[in-house]
Length: 90
Image (cartoon, rainbow, N blue to C red; front, side, top):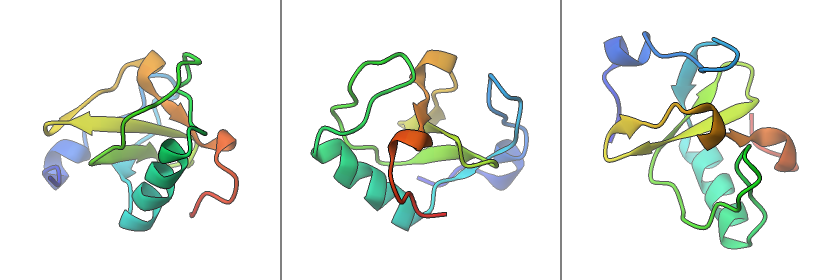
């Protein structure tokens, strides 16, 4: 489910305060393949075991936040760092 553009324009990363954007389909597919292979951890060090249906990414492409049932989960410990994802699509 896509977020309303006006609502999305108000959101920012809770750590860096950088703007957030919707993850592209290619980025989401790449991330979910890595999750399926067991290669993804949250910033809290816990493995991510469930594929994401939708997500946001900071404008510097460093942190991903999931969207659950249309609600962005913008908790610092709930982020997924992209540096662990080799060849992550830009």
